[in-house]
Image (cartoon, rainbow, N blue to C red; front, side, top):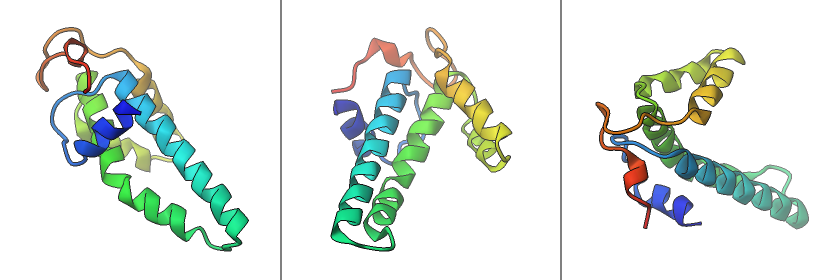
Length: 119
């Protein structure tokens, strides 16, 4: 949960680097929260997922920011996020980039994030 809150606190931070753990824990908790909201909406009887859409829009900028920082950790430009717009292939390429280990030591985007743990 600390990684999720860390990303939300740094919601518009596009500079620096993000560890794999930070990215994947944020993504996991984000998906769980969205799924729980969908279940709640189903129980309430809402036909259109208003609550989930509001939540997704609220976490869109932090999700993009942590994705850009994750790409920076692998020594790639944040503009690689535009690969999402290439159907199927772009998302697969980004998935591979997000799963790769980050560059050891300092790179052009900042110091190695493994040296500091999120608080």
